[in-house]
Amino acid sequence: MDQEEALTAVDNIVTQFNTYEDFLDSQITTMDLYYLEDEGLARQLVELGYRGTGEVVKREDFEARKATIEIARLAEKTQKKTLTSAGKDLQDNFLKALAAREEDNRNGKMSSVIFIRDRNSHGQEVSGYIDYAHRLKMEDFEVYFSGKRRLLPRHTDMRLNQVTTLPELLSRQNSTYKLSFLITFPEERLN
Image 1: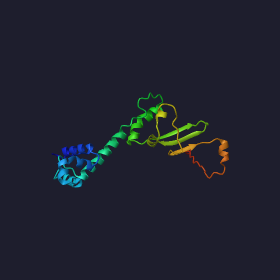
Image 2: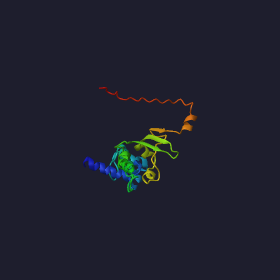
Image 3: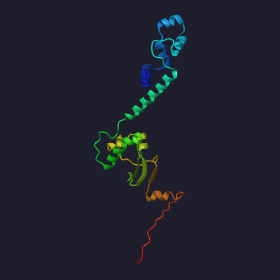
Image 4: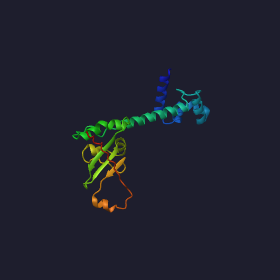
């Protein structure tokens, strides 16, 4: 039996039994228990390959294959997540662009940073950078793709700037924030 067939046999055993002890117990006959009178001794004989009705599998091999199969099962489960944008009739170009990048951002093949500049319900300008892959993990985008809500930056995103109205700005006179802008113009050439 080559290595691939051996792994297939071990995989069949691993998927059939929950624990290594269950596998060993399946190899013990009632006749073995009658003559040995000890279940632990019967398990040891099966584990060493001296007794049993089937394949000899070491505990380390059983547990390693069990862990590998469990990891593969969990990876397959996460891969089967349906895309939120699937089946939606998207009219907005922005939502179409998000839908085109959704699968790659969910799988980690791509990382997208979205810059949004918009106005909130109070008429204030809100702008910020959104890590698309992170937001896909943290919230359900169904409301955005269905058009029930607009995608806006939050305080938990990479950066959020909210321009406030004049009365709010004056009430924060004691703020320690200072902004400075450097604007340069190319020199005009005189002929």
